Image 1 (cartoon, one colour):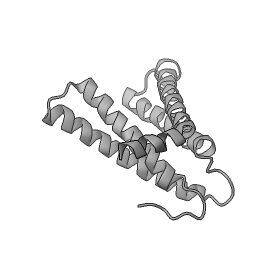
Image 2 (cartoon, rainbow, N blue to C red):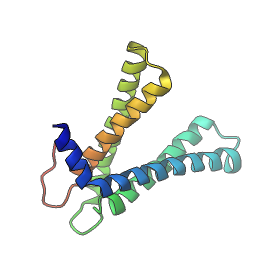
Image 3 (cartoon, rainbow, N blue to C red):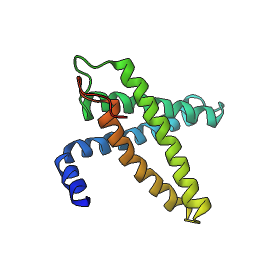
Image 4 (cartoon, rainbow, N blue to C red):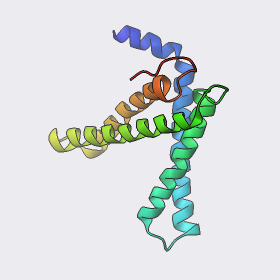
Length: 146
């Protein structure tokens, strides 16, 4: 089974690299937007509000980049509204999964918090890649995998 997973990942190495690149760019977009908002544009606004705004900017960038580049799902026959709803479901479920895995690793098993965070993020990266590939940005005419 592991050999099948490795073979599949090797076949999709370009798309996986694109997924990781967009994720890294989204992180930089988040940090840059947060810094711009909190340090220059709106220094007197609540940092929590500015953090949410920066997350929303990076999530929008992430959706557009994955839709148009990673999964090339912006062509004819692809319903953008449906993709946005499916994207929100994947992001929401990934957030819940990340929170649960972090809690399980750190609070229940006593794993150091940064290691727990890296573990949870790694699992969620795999989950979101597969979910976006099979669900969010599915090719036209193929059934949605649930």
